[in-house]
Length: 415
Ligand SMILES: [Zn+2]
Image (cartoon, rainbow, N blue to C red; front, side, top):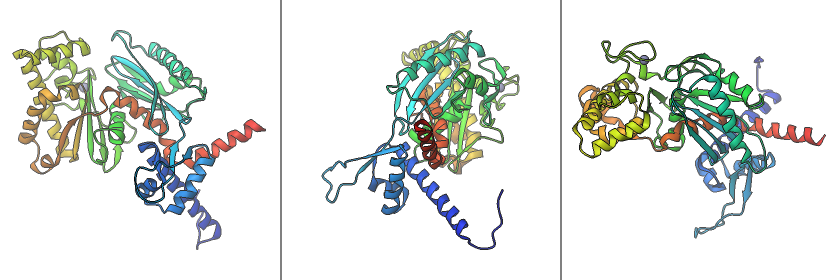
């Protein structure tokens, strides 16, 4: 509840300076997380804060166990060397990915280092919620057992190929897993012992987050990450803010109808974009068995490399539909970069030229002239790394809260 104040009171000024301190701590912690160990001078350069402010804030971070400061490395630069600030690696998160063909779990430290990572392929017939949750709990135990000091994660992030409500991780539908109305956040919280806060989001949204923070879209504030495997989804970042929609359901561009007379889609509609550029579309066009997965896709690409006309034609056809859909997205969002992930990144070398031609034909000239299309830089791990970023968000947004918590925990332990 906000209290009305007629003028600047002492308490009001105190509150404001505390708000500023928290915001400045957040700016430093974000830089350390994004870039890893940094010198004090680099922190000054990247945050715009004064040297004096940086010194005080770093001492807070060191006292709160969130960073350490070590001797400077003199790299032949004249002048006094600046001490190096290192993010404390005992603060880490659990990252989880639920894809159609695989499950992955990793531990990722504050500062971005991936400590441990496991990915298991799984047959498409075994996608039940119960089996998935049990397997993820097992994989989480595997990666956590590799932590030398046995500490627990500060949070967990989950990327899932489905339509997700952000507030509680409820999966409204995941057509390519055959899931509907699954309280995934709640199920995973129970399976992981109830102590770790869990945040769940759509895998394309998280792939976008990872490519934006650490990959092909680093430094770009208007981008679309388009991820394709069996299904197709987009993570959209507009003016430096991820676009989620009112509840988190946004970005499902794979279910925009491109061809009302087209093939039925797993979502219940017809002629959705993913029925023209998803994995099954490419396999069908190339005359390969539908549902053949990554293995069959690689065979199509090998056949195209060998000059087999059917494979080349199939890739061109997918490229045409890919370009048609992208032209619409370019007109709506005016992105400066489109990052193609998963299968779409894989086919980019084969279909890229057709995609560019379609954009020339179909998109408005002004936004078309500004946009570049590139394959993802982080490969298939983009959503997993984005899940880690999601789990770190509370710490990055208000690190002061976490310093306090650490002190409270220490006080409790010593009492
Ligand atoms: Zn659909």
